[in-house]
Length: 205
Image 1 (cartoon, helix red, strand yellow):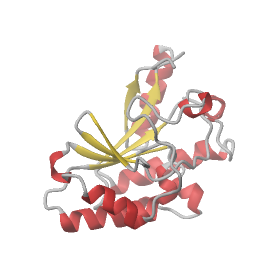
Image 2 (cartoon, one colour; image 1 turned 135 degrees about the vertical axis):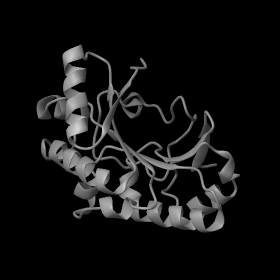
Image 3 (cartoon, rainbow, N blue to C red; image 1 turned 90 degrees about the horizontal axis):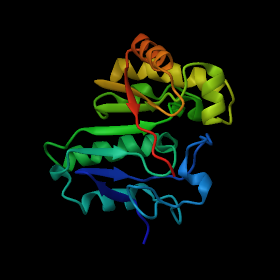
């Protein structure tokens, strides 16, 4: 049984892909894990189709969750068109749909070769972007994107664009090996892009 949707602390998470263009040093995937603290097995047999994902979502009492989060065990923006279509379908079927969030590395526009931020308007309430570093060097060392330092610039550009269309844009860092100065620099960077910073606790494997 494939885990497409799963619950965690009152929210519903949606797992649409295991593809990712980064290999972050702290990612559980490197240690042979197929799941996380959220769900035991997030490794997909195949990428769910739009209909499979919609069926999984509609089998839930969507209005009962505090939010719906596109996250999972990969980079959800690979499926940005399906995410937008799923949100449209949910809004049509469920009056008073809870807020919708995407957790992303911010590479959606880079991956698709076009600016995907305008698609988020009216659909996505919160975008959470992994910042993971205060400089291009630190970012590439931690996230190891396939595109190298271009990934850093793409993530910054996406954040700036997303802030034009999405009510709340958050950038996150993990506090492992970060000084107060590092964190302050990240906070200022996030604010300059129209985002706010959230510092996440490091969870040892």
